[in-house]
Image 1 (cartoon, rainbow, N blue to C red):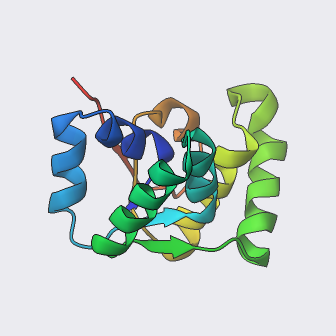
Image 2: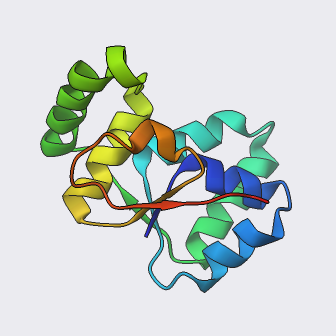
Length: 126
């Protein structure tokens, strides 16, 4: 399962259901975009080190952006930016999930809903 950035944020903020979801998922991954988005939220190097230690300890795979992902995301932005407000980061994360045929877990399913072939698991922190 590939996790959207919001799931990691919920877990970091102490939302038990987000932590449990991450811990009970056998194969965990994130897009390089999620990594970059999360790092931008870190307030200092200590928080960054904790984040990287968690990724390592839980054996997260970080999927890099390649030509396929970039091209597919560009097409998604062209098709959905004006009609469904999909942004670059979400398009890159969706394209990554499609390439690796992974279920995308997100609390923001509405942004991803129009993307054909994308398997979604909607997460709600409540």
